[in-house]
Image 1 (cartoon, rainbow over the protein chains, first blue to last red):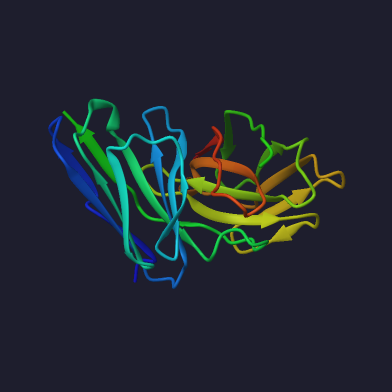
Image 2 (cartoon, rainbow over the protein chains, first blue to last red; image 1 turned 30 degrees about the vertical axis):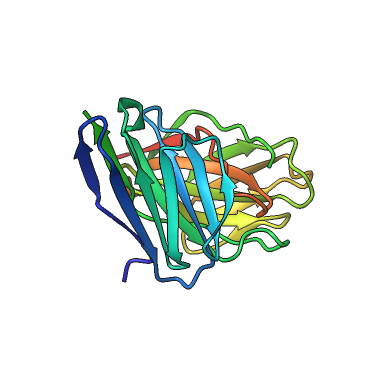
Length: 116
Length: 109
């Protein structure tokens, strides 16, 4: 019954590996997001997808590639993991962003990534 | 979206009201005041939002000054489970949320 779910909850991996984090929402929302929370606890937007289309791409290395197979899923694939990628990654969703509509964002529980 | 300013930390006795202030002196007319909180190791949780009028829901009350330059989130009877970081965000809805440092509220038994 979880509205926004993420898998895995914890991910420990070696530098240089490629890994994916999955996100699913069952709220019928059109827009999904990935946020990164670093060790200093700042939450920063990385990507936003609206109806499977990328609408926001902040300054994020090319090693990060989001993929949205359908509007209920937004996965994050990370190539060649680096130590600095260690963080908590949060997925979120809302009804359609922009267009003069004010929509509340709902967050998943987070994926804790540790790169060794 | 306008920047907000919050105290870095506050304490509150269990059972008492917790009043969390937020300054947003540059807020524009189409920006709402949103409050989220993040309990340790969890994702941010929506609490309440408002534009001009005071708002109340099952979690909290939001008091916005008449000039909209500041607001206060009120948790009427704080419990230990309300210990969290509380984020005040001026939000127009046209972009994703922009989180600041928030206020770390510690509810003490």
